[in-house]
Structure formats: structure tokens, C-alpha cells
Length: 211
Image 1: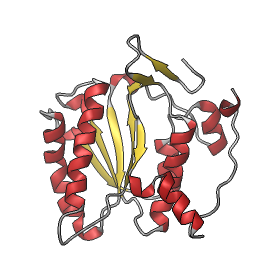
Image 2: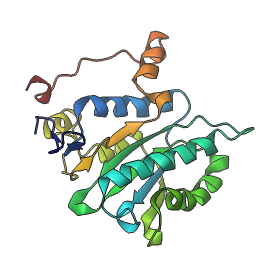
Image 3: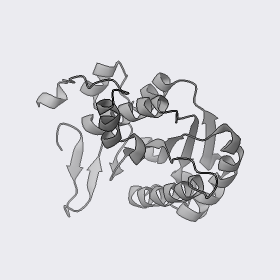
Image 4: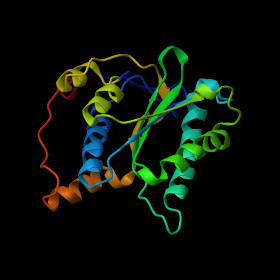
């Protein structure tokens, strides 16, 4: 295990991780800020509980299923005649083998009813049988800062301390446990910085980065 909480399994092919690391968390943090800056603020908070689907508590299957689900959303968002840039962030958590993903999305107000109506279908198509209506929870986003504090609670403790976030261990996960849509990723952050729209970068030094 390295100082960021990542390990390679015995076969050396799959990457397991125990905590959110520095660079992904920085991109996540900046992505939420950029979304708001360009008028695509994240306003719908969705949680999919894979422990209540046929995926069960298998992180490998859950990661693939969620990628399938995001692809379905992107097709819906880009629907001809009603295009919405797919804009979102996500974090997988697996405390006590309760495998779930928090997915926070920009959805125009006039399309939110249709978005919510599609969630069950997208989850079933991606994850198979859904055993409970509690497998999907949806709520509005009240605050970007509160959102980041909640979703980044699985940060490495020394990094969490920099942000004033209380670290809470969120279990082990295989593969990418945190991410964002391309339109609010680091390439786009740099683009908007070069245009003077987004604030310049600040140097970030943590105990973890020096180990």
C-alpha cells in the first residue's frame, strides 16, 4: 500500500484503493466550481445503492455498470433538438460492504421530471435486477461547499485536513472511485483559466504530497 491508500492486487492487473487521492480530489473540487462558473451548476444529487441490485457488492461489476449508466444518460442529455452538455461528478463509497455511488448532475429544471423518470430504467439496464425502491435516492443540491465536504469525506486524512473536511473511511473499491465529465475536467479548467474566466491555480502542499 502506498501513502495514498492504493494497492495492486496479487495479479497486478486491477487497482484497488482505500481513499480518495490528491489529484483526483483536486480535479473534482475544481470541476464543481467550473460547472457553476459556466452556467452548468450541479443541481441534482442521485445515489445508486448497488447492494440492492444484482451487482450486489462486487466493485468490478459496479464500476462497469455505472459506466454503462452514464453512457445512457449522455445519450439522453444530447438528445436531438434538446441538447444539454452532460455535466456531472461522482464518488463510489463502500463502507461496511454497502456499495453505492453518489452522482451529482446538472439537469435543466424543465427536464428534471424526465431525468428522474429514466433513472430506474437506466439502473436496471446497467445493473440488472433491482430489489428495492430504496436503491435510488434523489435530492436537490443545496450548496456546492456542503456537497464537496460530503463527497470528499473519503479523502486521505492529511489532504482532508487541508480542506477542513473530517475524514471518514469509505471502504475499498476497485478502479476509479471518483470522477467527472470531460467538460469540467482539468483540460477545460486550464482553457477557462487561460481565457481569464476561471481563477488562477494555487499551490497546494500537503503532508501526503511530501511522503
